[in-house]
Every structure is written in C-alpha cells, then in structure tokens.
Image (cartoon, rainbow, N blue to C red):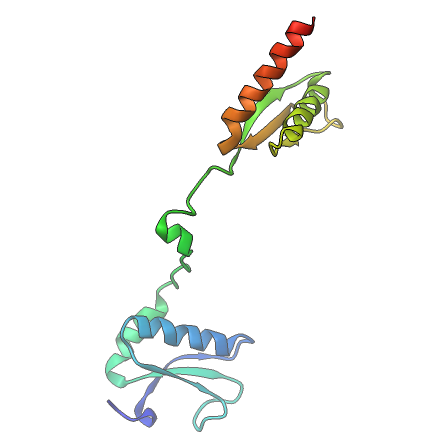
Length: 160
C-alpha cells in the first residue's frame, strides 16, 4: 500500500459540514473495501478551509464511482427486522357526513371514542359547511371502534 503522501484526493469540501461529509464518505468507501483517509486543512497540501478524502491511486476510479452514486438511506433497525413496517397506526375514516348536523355528530362520535380510550381525530371545518366532516381512528382500532359505535347506536335505539 502506498504511503499517505501518494494518496489521491477524491473528495474536497469547504462546506460548513465538510468534516462530517468527509467522514461519511470515508465510511462509505470503507463499506466498499476501499481504504481512505480524511485530512483537514491542518495537514500539508490541503487547501485552507477544506477537508479532503484521499485514496490509493489504484482505488481512485472505484472510489469516485462510489462517491458519485447517491448515498444509501440509513436503515431503521426495526424496519430491517420487519417490526417497524406496520400501518396499524395509519388513521382510517370511521365516519363521514356532510350537512347541518355533520359537525355535531362527528363531535359526539369523538366523545364516545375518546371516553373509551380510542384515539381519534375529527376532520372538517364549520367555517366551510360545504365540506364533509370525518372521524378517523388508527387502523388497528377500527374494529373495536366500529363495534363500540354500533353498541352505542343500539343502546340509543332501545331508549326511544
């Protein structure tokens, strides 16, 4: 392996994040099996105010190709194991209505759900009455919320 003075610069940065950028580039190159060094402007031959990443001449073309490719997105450990890829918390509509009584009904549904520990959100605007009102719950609680609202409707019908 050549000594560090024979290394070739494959990245030079003077950005405010230059040191972090150079370190990240060195790590990307290391993942590809390319030995790289990071040098700051306190090293001889480095332009003042910059950080550089250098590699051996034999690795220059490959290193430039690696650095030219978009950086991979950081992987979420839960997502890699499959545990974090759940849509159970996506909100889905359980009620949708438009008209004079829509807001009052949406707020009543919200009250029943929240009183029973089911998170929900009301979407709509009383300032724009032509738009519908909607109540949404997490997808994982949809069945529970639907059952609860049906029980409430049946209990209301029995009281009449």
